[in-house]
Length: 523
Image (cartoon, rainbow, N blue to C red; front, side, top):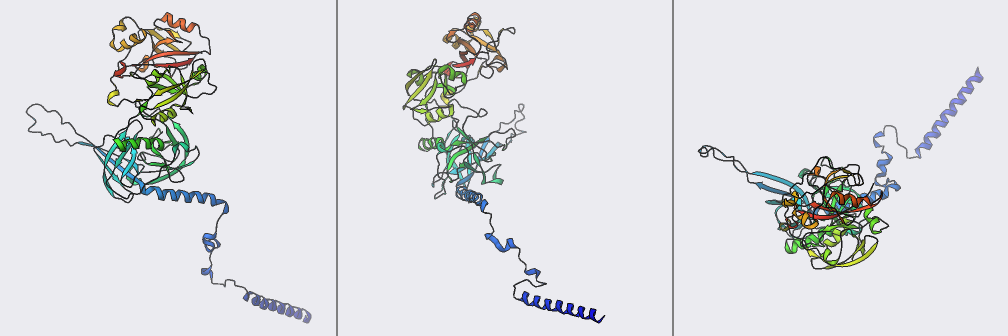
């Protein structure tokens, strides 16, 4: 019993000794004491800005670049309010009642808003034509909240570019980039006032999604130029006229349109290239209007059938469909309908917007060398002296008539997927058709186009309200059904047929008709 007691005493002494040594060792360390929880600082907080993820540095650099661009560009962006007063006509009252019921209807005021950006310290501002078109009063609000009444210097509906000016000095400006050198995939930022003043000076980011876009849904004036830059930077109503800038903060486009079923951002925004806008701006500032050079041709992108017909290995170039009424420099130089333009001044031409912009940069009276591929593979170069595009008043569109089909039992021309009816002798007396008889002596009216045929989307039928008239097939006049069928009898499945077609234009200078070339592959 005594032995067991001594063992417990020894064990207790050892425990006590270990405790004493432990306290002595702990006193040499800087450990938090019990009850000092309030002094505890988490590691992340203690580290502060020194806590970083190395792999995230490139993303942080991009973010800092966006911040720098936004800080640089926003002061030069403006909010534009336009106002148009529609003078209301008073309701007609019975005689004798005017004195008892005086007309006091207020004028109807239409208001709109958009964006713009300052391009000179003395107050010149670039924006869209559709932001200020028809406005009786234009008000500009700056980033520093000052407001000015603006003067419209000039507008150009053909490119949707406008220049306005405010009476101010020492204003912040933005620099211009080179829209021709931008590449698909590059960063782009849109700055503007989407959905009105509540979201003024909004910055959105995306990339350049595509270049050289031609938008079918937008109004296309006779000499309009469409060569849009596509971006997925968010653009909404109210962004129109604002700048699209690159990662260096240089303006590469003017935000102008969106593609959306709802009218709001869906990922597809479009901007006017700044190189084109600058050319227009310089003329508007200098003269208040734009003089545009033209070759006097009606054009479209070359299709596979066109490329094969003229011997191109790749589907590229611009098809000469027909010549403009009146003076046509291209016709005078020797170009022919059906030619495919492949180069201008030695520079390759791939599509319609590209050709439009290159010609649009020229001045009336200048000459250009136009290289074409012709039916059969012949390659030729012509020198074309450019003419001045007619003004809006000179190309005012008249009301169009309608050609009715002559019979519901027209035969289906299976080769092209169309039904046709010959123009009758009675049609010769119709003033709306006199131009067709004067030029071609008659033709075949397209009364129906099969949805699954090769002509669908290429020819207009009676169902569309203004049917096309085919006046020749592969150069053979088709004034009768027999002549039309004889011309088609020689072609085989897979062949390419060249049609000369008369189409309604409503242009009084051409008697309301124009000729164009349509190529179809026989099925």
